[in-house]
Length: 84
Image (cartoon, rainbow, N blue to C red; front, side, top):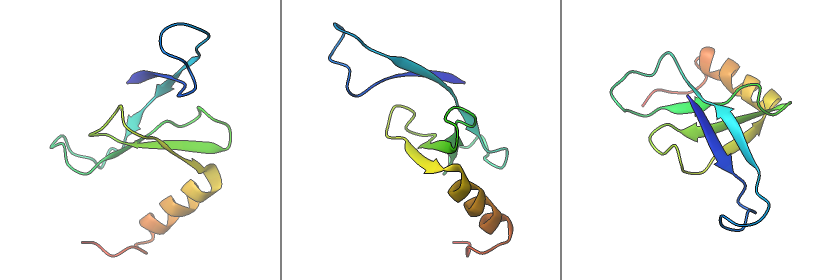
């Protein structure tokens, strides 16, 4: 799914605005039940990984350094985080 996002610095509909397209991807481990899911937009920003809540696609986006995201994924795969 591609989403266009306008810069928060854009002034209304008039003036000079920039929009960027992000191709969001949900984890294959996320079910279709609308549960707790995140989406990532890989390859959009060199060295960074945008992340958002799939239930709030127009909400805030967190941007992590790619190295931190890779480390996080490795820790999850290694079982370093307890399940709830």
